[in-house]
Length: 370
Ligand code: SF4
Image (cartoon, rainbow, N blue to C red):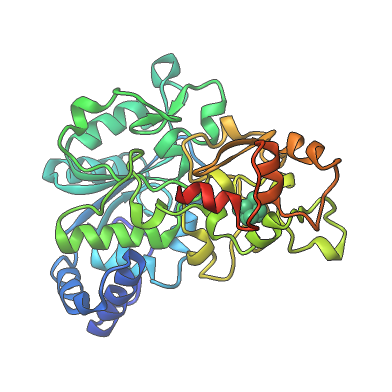
């Protein structure tokens, strides 16, 4: 059934190899697997169906995915697999569109991508499509799926809508809390959460290709995020970490000297954010938030947005992995206030914690290793 408005150019054997190679790099797997992945992709050509639902969302994840050039996400969706239902890109509307979803459900065994939060308040009536609540659409569509991939902060943990009146939740989580509204229809099915606002196209391509090739999902953390993409801390890998350690915090956006300094005082949530934006980057690998002089808002985390807002104001405390909670005001007060560029933040932190850093080594590092 050709219900879609977009068609990508015909995909060639060379394209399959290119996509396979890129996907393996995304997943951190050996390039020796390229022929196997390319074969799996070729064999699934047009066979693996995908149903993409949108609920309480801004369609930003769809935009992000379809704008990706490398790997060519549109080719993955439109040529390699069979996209059966997607409100934003399908040509069909009304009953014809709903028929496409019903037919896919009859056949079953598809990959279900969910974009947008699921409003639960007022029996789900804050979001209805074709006369049905999104909550019920998720229930019935999930019940026939083979695997489910909630994408973006909203579908995974509730995202920005969670801070509103609709009791918006992700498929498995309301923020950090695991709820059980859909457990009966998703029992036994893999659920792979791909948060951030929006979803990163490469992470979705990587998970789909992994599933098509191996029939399994990559290892996940306790919030159902693939460790390959969400297993690293932003702060530990940040190119501005040297400025943090040296106590150089940006306080004035207009000061040219401060342009590359640490953004912690401008609300950066890097110390509590787990993702690989620092190496994967965005916009076809041009840059990412911190590189573009914007604090990390922590959109990879279940606490985003409600518990992190207002997002451009600094946290009172900083939580450092392996160190614990550090009150930055006390840290500053300990050395007489102001930004002490000549005194490393590691030393400031150790002073605030009443510890000595006599050997000149990083106290943060020393505590992490102990
Ligand atoms: Fe980078 Fe933010 Fe950590 Fe500063 S606080 S080093 S900008 S992650």
